[in-house]
Length: 185
Image (cartoon, rainbow, N blue to C red; front, side, top):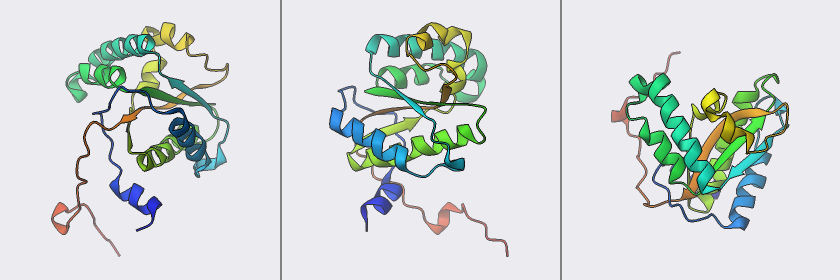
């Protein structure tokens, strides 16, 4: 099986990440290779923010916990989970772009997904945090956001964490018993 197909089939989101720093050459490969993968509407006007500052990650985690409890608590359950994921990961990656560009958020999510696939090649895990871009626009997180130096006119569109995997869980193998496909002709 070729490496790309293996990465696609084996990659799983994980929130069980090691806090030790990702090696610079692996981080740069994830950023460079990931941003080259195809994305919707050829939106290439990105800005990447890699947050490794433990203090800022803790502040952001605490702010996100409060917002999850207030806005999403009834859906997600324990709001501490989002804060824990932010604090216990090696880094937070924010893909920012121009929200007014057509399909910008979808394209940013595709870029992030590409980076998740590249990370798999280095046995680096990732977890896409779907509601964090919304949280970064909330008043509670503005103090932290100001410290991230995201350029004017850009806003967070896709966010997630990366880190070396704590455990290598076996992938779920789909079977016909999973009943997840309908074919209508």
